[in-house]
Image (cartoon, rainbow over all chains, first blue to last red; front, top):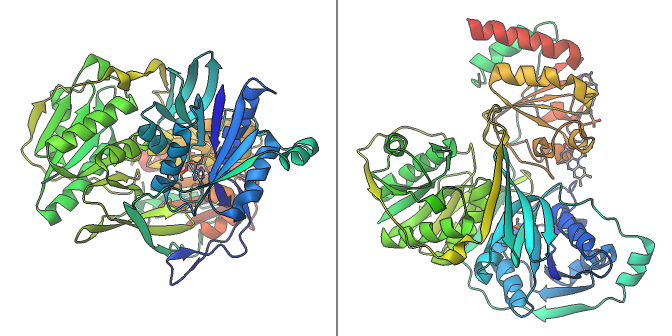
Length: 245
Length: 324
Ligand SMILES: Cc1cc2nc3c(=O)[nH]c(=O)nc-3n(C[C@H](O)[C@H](O)[C@H](O)COP(=O)(O)OP(=O)(O)OC[C@H]3O[C@@H](n4cnc5c(N)ncnc54)[C@H](O)[C@@H]3O)c2cc1C
Ligand SMILES: Nc1ncnc2c1ncn2[C@@H]1O[C@H](COP(=O)(O)O)[C@@H](O)[C@H]1O
């Protein structure tokens, strides 16, 4: 089985988010990057399925050379090789086209992404890839089992879950529950250095959208503290002031 | 030209987010002097279909076929794109629900349209360019997306646009699509839905609790408060990690992002990763025994004290309020 895991590079969750160029560009100065947490789940699931040889795992990242530490970390977790498409990840449509173009040449049985990235929170890449490849996709998977050529997946739906089966190949967006996050060990880290990392040029993709401005949300006013012996006051304020009950 | 709105249903009932999408579409259609057409796929009765008229649709296209009873994203995407083409829709609007997320990029690809996902504002229309806002970096920022393509797909964030009635005469048009078997590669085995509970992603009110509740045996209190308010329940990550609550209740950076009208946080410290998933809630109430808990900094109302004393009193106070 050949598995492709799509890895994005996102600001560490505690990062302060600021913008430059008159609020038109994200300021990456001083930002610590990590593997998107959902992609860690995807990668951990892939490595679990491979279980030391039952599958071959490729990680792919669209981004510039600065994200190679993230790719090496993915190799340290247990991927066999990596591909980097050498271009800034302009948007989900661009990224998905790069990944689909690469995937067309390789016939993967399983393509895993995170359910969404925690920077742009698009949850788009996964369905775009599937549509470009004309194969099925499952957007928010909480459990994945592979049996021969068939995947059984629990998909999250509002207020519950759907259990479905699908024949490979399929693109799946992973959420909590699919796997325990694997932390790289020393052997993995050492081994990662000599695993193949191929850099490929990007294909041209006309833009259908662009981000023209960023702003920070207006801060809330100061908290109104209510005495714990006067709970009725809270109920009253929720009704008359906040108008939410 | 027209705007096409796909409305999801659950067991034959339209979702509230569908009416939000219709109202949103109606507001755009009014500025552009276009019609709003709704689209329903699945087994929905006429009385339900007619409800789309209340929110401004002049026509609803009804696709009802046994094979399409349940959501299959490839098949649904094909149908939505085909109907968009045949009705000459310039804009396709759907809700950014769990299913919508798997659908919108496919529809956009088929139509070579730009996609504004999880939209939180009406577009500012500047000729062919539409400017639409969405929250990014886990609610730490808001981005303006410029849609540049002639055809546009917008998936509307849940709870971002208040449904408003705008009654119009509605015509129901039954439609039998051509369907390709290759669009049905996923087979649904089972759907499990907790019908007695308010669904968290769509809830107007969320009662959420953290490690301050000490253990799963105390969740009766959280549930009782939620019941009085007609709210959904949620929790912090350590709570679901410890197995006190199911994973789907976990909100925050690595869990679900919610933006209800009212979010009540009980015994949650307010770590940045937690806030990432809840800070766009309209009103936030925090109950915490530690006056220094970071959550108070982003709260509208706060009570400093022991949850085990405060929550029962709050339940009583709300019951009194409700009975008046
Ligand atoms: C990469 C990453 C991703 C993460 N993602 C998430 C996420 O998505 N969601 C999330 O929630 N967390 C997430 N976390 C964890 C997060 O950093 C915090 O550890 C977590 O939110 C803390 O949960 P808590 O507030 O329930 O527990 P604690 O931090 O232990 O806080 C408990 C609170 O309860 C109060 N308390 C105790 N007893 C009482 C009482 N009797 N009455 C009233 N108050 C009481 C305490 O004062 C305290 O403020 C993530 C962390 C990392 C590193
Ligand atoms: N630059 C990238 N390179 C490779 N994969 C990516 C990239 N950006 C996003 N992805 C994948 O697509 C998923 C969803 O991202 P998004 O659609 O941006 O929310 C992520 O969890 C990754 O698996």
